[in-house]
Image (cartoon, rainbow over all chains, first blue to last red; front, side, top):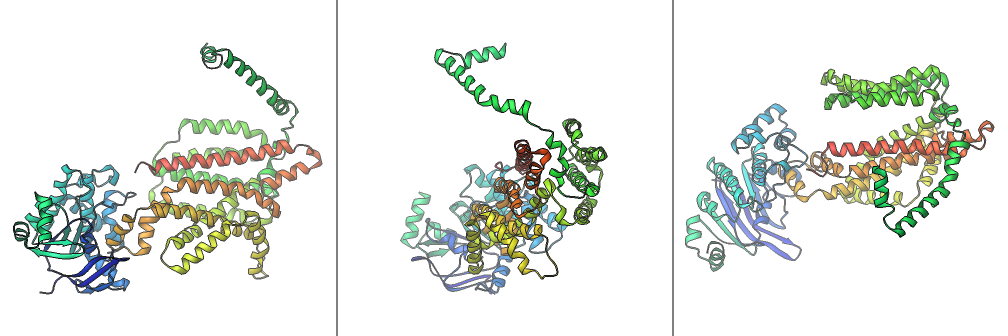
Length: 244
Length: 372
């Protein structure tokens, strides 16, 4: 089967710093891939290349049959199909929760207001905060904001969801509610790429775990295999530090 | 008794402070005695009401002055309607009482025939607020459009060369603001944008304009703008000067807006792009609303500066408030009243600027600036 994301020999530099080195990665439709690794290993950069928030200097990325190159139309087409959730939520502070969610469907997908709002309310129901629709982001807790951010990304009905450390900015007691929303999404068959430090989440829902270090994919495999029986010594060292 | 206690505790607590208080009082008496004596006994304040029409509308033909009144009434009425409709606030009692007090105060300064208009103008704002909630929402836009057209039609029956006084000052302020704002936005977007050509042009324009005095720009536009326009449609000086003024103000507005744009976190751009918004859609829906909201205090400050700087157009022979004031003092009948007239002009500017400042604070609070 044709993978929904294909990365071939992807290389990226920040100035002299080589942050992605010859990355080759295929993701199948419906697959949940969790990317782990020490900070500065390039895992965030990796998923940010998939919707072109980061440009690459060498290699090739094809998303859902669309080649990501300099063509702005291709970039826009990919971004319509790829939703993203950020570490710092990045909700629009001048809009209510409902406006945050309906904005992109209305102006990018050109849906009428009624349709956009109806779908937004369904999504808010799904992430369990329908009663907050008329509030502004600053009036919500971190966990609620991140669930709004998930609903906002889903409102575009993307084929792929990217999560860039979605729980790292949250107070510990709010991590669970966000992970629950993500687990529910994973079970619904969404293709997901998740950068996270939540090893429990990786074990429970990932189809595949990728360990990155210094811009390279060091090791990948099913979660049980990577966590219980890591092959590479850098993976072993990292897991020893995280799991103890 | 309270006052005496307060004075004892704060002004006369100890020998040194008592002496200091007495010296200060003596100094205040000596320094203000002359001014107070002049203001209450010598000043011929009657020059102001006697020339009120000249100061307010300049050489506007007296039989057409109702047009200016109608513009004022219309503006206040529509402002009240829109405000009342959006907030559903009933006009508070102080508004009606204020209208009554103002009527009593201004009454002697207007001709008997225009007292009717004065009453209408004072009642227009609270009446608009009262009626606002009764108007269905879908009628508001057409209503505002009709009002806007009327605001253009009403004064157009009179040659622009005859517009003057405070009326002209307000017209220039509004006209310059309306022209400068979109131009300033474009410059700010150009300067923060990705396209090198626009960025360079914007930077050059902004730095050039900010490097020269407003008077020179006004003079230059007064001489130059007519050269770009065919001979047969001779623009009134008012238009050429306003264009120059707008070009000047736009450079400053652009810098304020740029500050706001650069204050929007990078994550906001990324969230907008990740949702599939194009560059111009992100600017319009995400970046500019936040950027402008955060610089409203600075923008209103610039508005106040425009309002006060309109007084410079008197140099070019436009009959604005300052020009009319100086004309009044040259009238042999009112010789030697420069102080009275200029103080009145300052008072008018001060009230105008204070109202704008007040509106700015209300606007900030309504938008929840600093709270979300």
